Length: 177
Length: 457
Image 1 (spheres, each protein chain N blue to C red):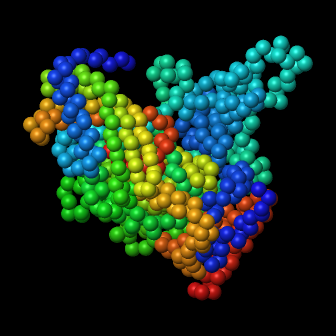
Image 2: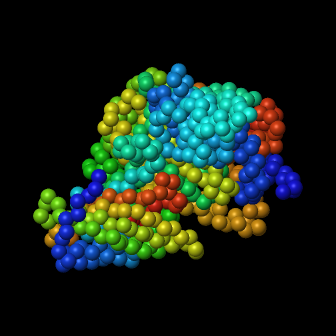
Image 3: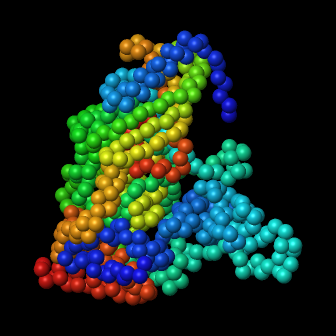
């Protein structure tokens, strides 16, 4: 199950990295509508549960059943943001202060000339209310597409989020990854 | 630890007051593990999760890890997941299939029927002999299954599962018995912790429709389509508005610690937050449900429920969950998606999508529930706060027995009959040495409740 990493130019690596940092900044700055402009119309934004499998099951790629945690279209992402805007989304009143760290960026070419697969490790720090702190750590698989739909020239066509915890030690996931 | 807590004094169900130290006191929590989680019938697993011999599922009874396993003869046994040698966990995977449970510490191995079958170096390490038959896994005392749900209790004197559920079974059947073939669990389980006492969650699902209007105001605003919307948010079959905006009447049930609430609807329209495929499915299967359950329950596609102490579910939205206690200040939620077994695969997938959208840690509704409970738990660190009585008076004295076939002690949906009953039964269990004693106390409380309401009627 190893992913083939096709090297891309330093220039492209730099451009895509800068885009990912910009995208993270939009979330950290609570500019959620601006963030939406970076999201493709056909995005599938997902997270599934993690599980512990027996050794022999793991070796033959069998695991206990999993389910969605996030399974969003762009419309649903827009609803999440609209919810925040009501002023009555109590999980985010006041909004969490977040810092999205994106690193270990690996970029691969794809079957499409204007799309790239990106694999990153992320660390998402969340500070809430008076002194609540949560760290979310995991891996993300993004598909980026060149586009004329926004000023940045890129959009996120797919996002698969892996959160490493089996039992999530956070009372809710009211933030975006 | 020698102070004696007067638990009954903390629960004043007659005057509708509770003292919130019940949510924080470590001594009370220890007593709960012994007298609630050590004695009540607790949900363990769904039959569909372990269909074949050797299939196992790991869960908890209170804080005790439990492995539930299908036997060769088709029956189900459950064991404390604890090696008898040095207490190590003998099964760590969430679920799977196995011939034996082998402890990773020293290698003691147990058959799926719990027998200790292999002890490494046995003749050399135990030259005096080891009576292996004495050291099998500890078996959960009683196991019983109700329409696909497997329960267990440690108390050999506990009443039967059917008697334990009492009238609550009628409400549970509304989910389990809609169609021929029963139900099954779809997909995996949402597991997450909330830093709050387990009783907030269990009580809310027993007794609290009231919070939905305000706590979930944001979700209602953004997920609810307007009736005239051609392009409804989640699909053409979606119900336009939340059930509480359209229903004419509603009720709450509260008895033996259990609780439930729902609205009487006129059409088999599911809750507003489900996919169109789910709404359509409920309309299409309504005739079968009507025949099996009667009109009231066949139409009941929303509402909340708790089977005391920690099994909760919501009708229509397919979420069923257990609130595993983790000390007085934390609960671990395990939320399952439950659907009719005979539903088409694409409908099951739609149920799973719908359950995820509304519930689970990222659910549009569930996010805001946990936020409330976490903040409450923080406030109750205060000495003054945790000793200040809370108002639980809603609908007091309006309890009644209905004559339309809906069983048990009921009230209008916006009441706290089920909450008062939940805490009174909780106190009765904590202050009683035996099941029979606790049951007698709860029966006496419920008798006055119904008599009082007759006098006021």
